[in-house]
Amino acid sequence: MDNVTVRQGESATLRCIVDNRVTRVAWLNRSSILYAGNDKWCLDPRVELIANTKTHYAIRINDVDVYDEGPYTCSVQTDNHPKTSRVHLIVQVPPKIVEISSDISINEGGNVSLTCIAMGRPDPTITWRHISPKDFLKKCTKTLHESAMGFLSEDEYLEITGITREQSGEYECSASNDVATPVVRRVKVTVNYPPYISDTKNTGVPVGQKGILQCEASAVPSAEFQWYKDDKRLIEGQKGLKVENKAFFSRLTFFNVSEQDYGNYTCVAYNQLGNTNASIILYEDTTALQTPWKGPGAVHDGNNGGSRRAGCIWLLPFLLLQLLPKF
Picture 1: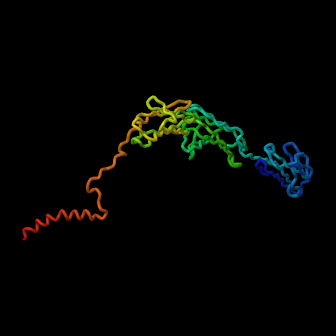
Picture 2: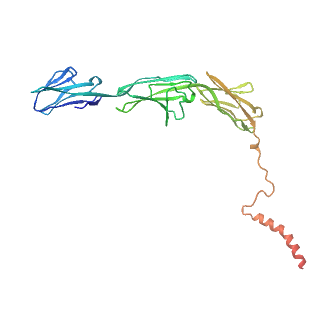
Picture 3: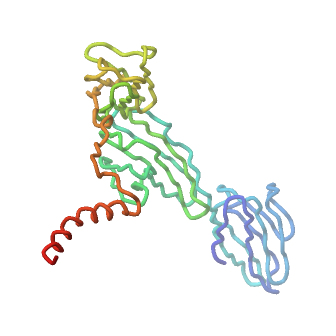
């Protein structure tokens, strides 16, 4: 008999080949008798006799669990002497993640330790992956292998030292042992960092037109914004002015730009980790008010007839001068 391998929850059939010389048969689990002939000796309702013929003797164990794993013995008595055959029952268990780190929030530069504990038979393989496409694990203390969507770490523990804002995102733990589909759990890592103003530009607007200054900043938590002209803070509700703050940008709108509006403006972005500022100039753009001057002859007839007539009038005196000597 060969070893019998089944998955947890399935049924295992144990067979013993016999012949007509056999007088007595029994199935034993270690030192306990399960069946002797047709008589059931164990109290486990999951164990049942399915065959007792002249050729084979078999039992079945339903709803197999891990504690059923181990050696089983078929004992055969013949006229001459007893014989035994042994089979080892192997119970496979799908992977199960029993412990995993909670979502965490940490300031940039801190150290992160993620844990993923899984059970199964055979022991599952644990892999960590950073699933954000643009993120890169550059400072992990474990050996990492690059993949299409980040990096892998074949360990229950993932250590990240000096974490950066690019390393924020979701980290996926996968447990697999080829018994069933891998089990996947995720941990969200939020990296907090002070604001960084990424995009500002000076803006030219004619007098009397609408003007917009915009300030974009990335930060975690999201930045708050303030606008200043010189040392004076600008607030929502001032005449002819609108301040619009969103999660990642702030917009300053002038509905009717006057001479007094031109000048240097300061955008300040801040959160509890720090602040930064940028200078933006609103200046007068006079080019938009100028229209090209068109002198005489700048407008032409669509069929060029006018230009041909002008050419003929100019040539007439010249032709007359050529014809006079002949007369």
